[in-house]
Amino acid sequence: MAATYTPKLRFSSSSYFSTTTTSTTFLHLSKHLPLPLSSSFFRTPAPSPLRALTTPRRRLNHLFRRRFTTARAESSSPGNGAHFDYDLFTIGAGSGGVRASRFAANFGANVAVCELPFATISSDSAGGVGGTCVLRGCVPKKLLVYSSKYAHEFEESHGFGWSYDTEPKHDWSTLMANKNAELQCLTGIYKNILKNANVELIEGRGKIVDPHTVDVNGKLYSTRNILISVGGRPFIPDIPGREYAIDSDAALDLPERPKKIAIVGGGYIAVEFAGIFNGFSSDVHVFIRQKQVLRGFDEEVRDFVAKQMAVRGIEFHTEESPQAIVKSADGTLSLRTNKGTVDGFSHVMFATGRRPNTKNLGLEAVGVKMKDNGAIEVNEYSQTSVPSIWAVGDVTDRVNLTPVALMEGAALAKTLFANEPTKPDYRAVPSAVFSQPPIGQVGLSEEQAIEKYGDIDVYTANFRPLKATLSGLPDRVFMKLIVCAKTNKVIGLLMCGDDSAEIAQGFAVAVKAGLTKADFDATIGIHPTAAEEFVTMRTPTRQIRNGPPKEKKQPDVEAVAGA
Image (cartoon, rainbow, N blue to C red):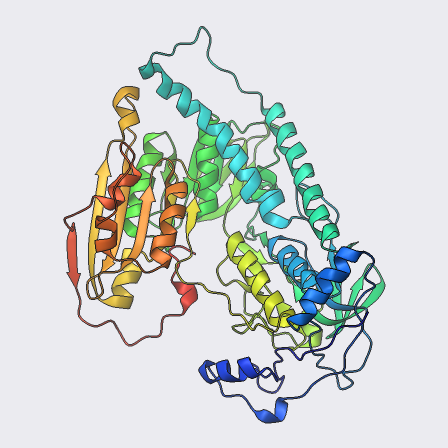
């Protein structure tokens, strides 16, 4: 059964950021797009057949989709009647790629995705369905966070009457084995997600040959559209002895617990791993070039989390840049910086950022524009400078968060195959740092809010949580609300303390909806909880009046503290 074809959003190669379509609805919406549309671009390409519909349910679903004009994306090739193997070919089966591929298939497109074979550590020949977040990022990291927190909880328990005849012992090999078994399970789940959506999975490394052809292990596949969702890779600077260093991939799969570890970097990956290894009783040293960790985050939050981490025994070496790693005869490592040398490390880990994984994809040859760091340039609809090639996720270096990649992938599928041009919405994106204690936030930092709005009211609370009253430990919680003085809207919500990520996720709905401080004040708190503090703050800690904000356009993607 063939589907009726309805033209979809098309971008002109001569006008990189212009958009065209024959949809009446979109012609109306186009009045609000950044650039005007030219009617000379409006044309209807020839239809292409859908895949065979093999089950009654699939035929029923297909007829339902036809009614809402789902079909093929327009080819940018001169002969729009040309046959292609696929409507969408996705390179990279991470979060964004899987979401885009699955949604596109549900809209009636013929979709394939290629991905490298599974491995816990990524390389040019290994990856795995699920991508960075699932296999060597968010998920395994959170599992290690859970495991490492037990040490603190054992310590807390004494004040509540618990005692132990012997000190609890941790078996590292058990943790690694169970973690890897879970990763194998998850990559299998993702494969089933693609299979159930009728997305063809091709194992191997994809390379773009031309705007409509992808090479996977020597076999060529033609496609109307190509999606690049290959994510990023950890970056280790080129210094003497870099071969002795490990990155975040390796740190998640070590054969044994580090006894003494140097972590170079001050971003969220560095502070998360510092908390993890500290929880496992490793001697942790963090080396940062700046005066403080978490550059780009709210200044008060930065100061608070650093002090809490130091109280737990993590040693910070500020304003130190690594110059070399030296291996001693006994196998220990020394880290030389601009301020001196620290000896005796069993491991030196670099958490100095990630780079878009765009090497050897053939992008330069087909004319895809990239930034200096290798990130792919895209417009508001995730389209590259080549009209038939698109990109989502960390490879574009916009807001590098897994849920954002999911949003971008879904938006792309709607744009191409649902006759629903959709821009990703980067307003009020919540995020978390799973440091110990963790950070949860949504909206703007105080510094961002001052720059954007000028006049703000800041509410803060810094207190000892109820649990610490019996544990006797020096744990504290910091909470902060930032309010636009002119509109009374809550434009920033930040917390550092237990359960902050869970709490911030709930309040993110309120911030996204544009609720005011009066709405927060009118909300009844749940007692006794830390979260109730967000609805009981009555007196501003400070009121900042800087007048009208500077005349500077604030891109939506900047409105995420620390991202």
